[in-house]
Image (cartoon, rainbow, N blue to C red; front, side, top):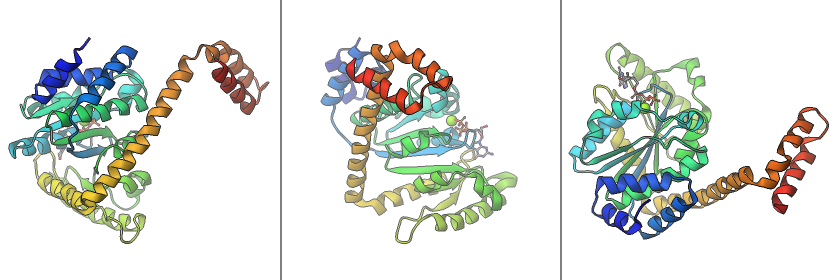
Length: 321
Ligand SMILES: Nc1nc2c(ncn2[C@@H]2O[C@H](COP(=O)(O)OP(=O)(O)OP(=O)(O)O)[C@@H](O)[C@H]2O)c(=O)[nH]1
Ligand SMILES: [Mg+2]
């Protein structure tokens, strides 16, 4: 497909078509493309953007928020890349069309690059593609990269592992409703914003932010970064600048060394994630495993064979194959 050196040249020059093609290349699972993607990634200039993950339940306003924030940032002279990690597109094989339409301004902004979620593969595969797409954007002088992900399943943990700051958007919830927020997500969040703080919901949002800040003090230990909880209205672009200030404060708190350490640790985690993803692919495609798969599955289902024995046989077949 691609001429890697032409792509590299285009990326350096900041040409959108080249950036777009390069991202398509890193998303591809075809062996020839993966080889070219490796060549491409080895050749691009390594730069570091401000990497921010944005998560929250469907409909909380992530895309609207990114539209407001991204427009502000490009107006201030930044180049903004937007990527999405969407686990539902992994399941259904379709990608979210909504994201583009809800970022109408940003999608036509010459200083922004909006890319929907890759639509094929496992979450591990999508994560691999996203990390590489991030590198492509950075090499093309996008200095802020925003990654949108729905706060269901594992995708937010995956995204938190590839960004500097993780922003969690939520809706006004107080008291018992706070239980509905997964504890795990509060643990990985660096900044929390109660969105849709507008109209009749403004007061409610403020109360919710205060309650949430209280609940968080119990989750986090002393001396750790205490995630600030603020309110905003993405729709009215109110408080979005304040949320961004908090993101920058979190960066400042990490400091250059802390950030470097965090990124290095993420690289190591990513290394193993790549290995696991590759092993899973190989397991799935192994003809030796395929040959015994149905028979073993039936034996386990009928209670004839214990899971431990079946697992051993599968691994033996894989190792021998
Ligand atoms: N009143 C109000 N509505 C908002 C606000 N932010 C988003 N919305 C509305 O909420 C709906 C969902 O917004 P999106 O930005 O698409 O939400 P999302 O979190 O990206 O949703 P998914 O991508 O489907 O997970 C849209 O109708 C928005 O107009 C806000 O601050 N205030
Ligand atoms: Mg969205």
